[in-house]
Amino acid sequence: MEALKNLRICDFTGQLAGAGATRHLAAFGAEVIRIEDPVNEGRWDILRGNAPFVDDRRGIELGGAFNNHNVEKKAITLNLRTDEGKEILRRLVEKSDVVSENFSSGVMDRLGFGYEALKKLRQDIIYVSNSGFGASGPYQPYKTWGPIVQAVSGLTFSSGLPDQPSAGWGYSFMDHTGGYYMCISILAALIYRSSTGNGQWVDLACTEAAATLTGPSILDWSVNKRPTRRDGEPNSNRNAWPKMAPHGIFPTNNIDTWISLACRNDDDWTQLRGLIDDPAGFDSNYDTIEGRYAHQDSLEELVSSWTLVNSQNDLASQLTSINIPNAPVRNPQQRIDQDENTADWGLWPTVEHTQMGSVRVDGLPVHLSETDWQLERGAGCLGEHNDEVYGELLGFSSTKLKDLKSQGVI
Image (tube, rainbow, N blue to C red; front, side, top):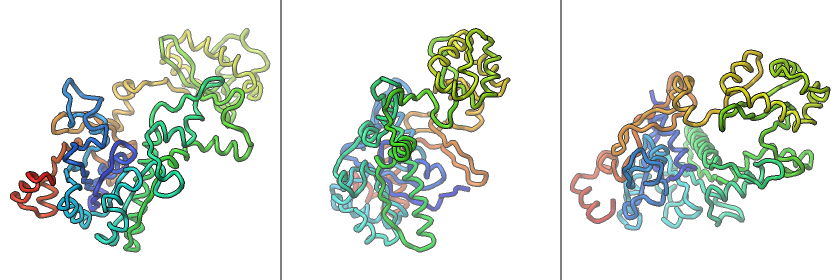
């Protein structure tokens, strides 16, 4: 049974911050109808037709990231520059539960499909807008992209090593976070509608979603008046609270291989010290957590000199045998191809794409006993589901569809 099989979403989302949200809903059975512009071949979503690719072929239908973010969605084309295109969208909205988009603020209003206009078409419609800075506030007109959101939210400033420039997070984690919040808010709005009969406008600012990831820095300043960047901080390889030492990532005997470990207390340290078996390297400074914490530089040099002459897997086995939390630092290839738990969880299922063929995509790291997710169909090609949506859902004849296509409406 599909948990969301009766949910229909009229979807304008793209990239990941928006498309990621409706992707999750599609995985649980929602009918997500993704609308794209036939004139520019859907290129407002820059992931369409861009790397990574599965083979030597290139083209607008072959973008790997686009496929990943739009699995199980239906793809239609509709030219909203035309009056007839706008009328068709009105009919589609009337048959939808949700209209979702992550354009810059104000785009849907300029198209004539802001929340007030949508309510006239369907009183209980749920409209979800996910923009960089939201639909209100002094930053509302600004346009954003991943590095901008990361910088403004405070994330870029919070990452790095002592005495080094801010490094940033290297990837748009705020896009994932924005998608998660968007997905949760859609479900919350649906629950509200089921009990009241009322729709609503969900206004989401991706920059503010990203700011929620800066909690420790905000708390430290609010409570202790300590800035994020100060002598010795931030150090992304150490744990400030609760105090643990050694606690971090250490090199092993092959190039770019590492082991993570955490000594939670003095008992853990006693066990680790016995495993290292180098009494000359220890002094009384390391006997207590306060001493180890105060002398982390020398402590980490000592631990690293031991890990460097051992293999990653041997270290993991030895540390596990004495109950010290640890894990080899895995790269993505190892997680996909070598991790038995990942395989058991089905975290990277294979879907069938009309042009690409069989392709692995991201699964969901959760399973429901009665209404689990499923991903089998790749992203739709441009207009791939025009006949199904316009013919079966809206009732257009084959002749009507041919006319609409020849006129550039679909």
